[in-house]
Image (tube, rainbow, N blue to C red; front, side, top):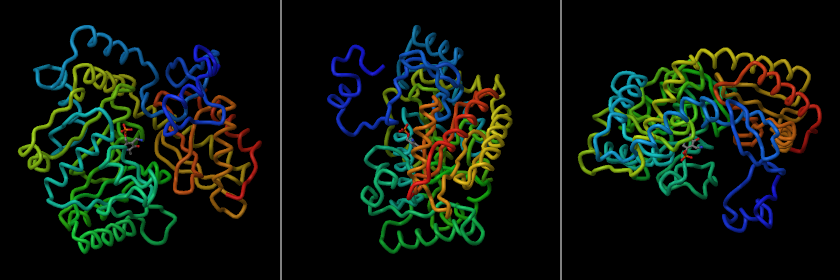
Length: 426
Ligand code: PMP
């Protein structure tokens, strides 16, 4: 189904008009026209299992979200310079989930914008510019946020004010939490020697692009080390936020730390561009009193209607409890399959965020085979991707409404993808 109304085919039309920066998934790209829950349908009516999408987190086209957005769209959509109940009601609900002290919220449209704003807030508060991130971090695509996102292109994109630290991998020597804190301390020293000071430690609290390191309680000493040099801790909750781990609404909750600033996006509006930063008022103060903030679309009545409907669904469908149960079943299924396939290395994750390492016979990362498995699963109509420093970790991150039969479908496809792919040189 790639031809249709574009004379030269939809792929060629994209390349011609969008240019080479736009990358498609898969050798045989997927052309999706409809979604429902955890399932997607292509232009030919073929059904796909979505085991990758964390934006449509409460399910593709969830009727409660669709209805809330449609109803708001038909009455009024303006911006934050007029009074509207939606933003006040939603802010109260959101802040109640974030625990004590994090008492103010500012809205944007993308995770990138939220992180960009968080960097400005942190710099205004600390008077410093140095930033510490993990080796393969991705925090977004603005100019400032690209400079703290090594996964965009390694050292080539990093700003001079940025230092990277390895993620907390429990397989490395010593206490995971202490080792991570040592790296943060060393990075902080280096930033101070270079004259940048240390503004913030920014952490995706499930270390998704680093390869998914989901062990809890690994952040306390690192956050203390950052604070000891006057820096603030920014928890990037774009990936684990809004209940994905099942155990907690936020990734930082699993680590027993209190962030100074929290950033969030993706699942917040279930597909509408809705994002935010939430922070302690004393951290926001310097920024907020020295410059006004306006974001044309951020916090609009329609955005707030979508976001409120997402919270409604998380509560009414008891999604965190669902995620614990279905995540455990999915993980058990993968573990059972792994017994027959030595190519499966470490299996890790939390809730419905699961990483599966693909390795060679001598336990080296097998990037080529991981990619082949992603392609084989696509051919079986199951959508996943890869992550991690070596690109060999299968990234399994379905909508939170994944069902028992979805788990069965997923496991059948993974089993046969492992059976039909071969080890590569890595
Ligand atoms: N932070 C993290 C951890 C992300 O994964 C992403 C998106 N992949 C972003 C920030 C940026 O979000 P957006 O694409 O909405 O700008």
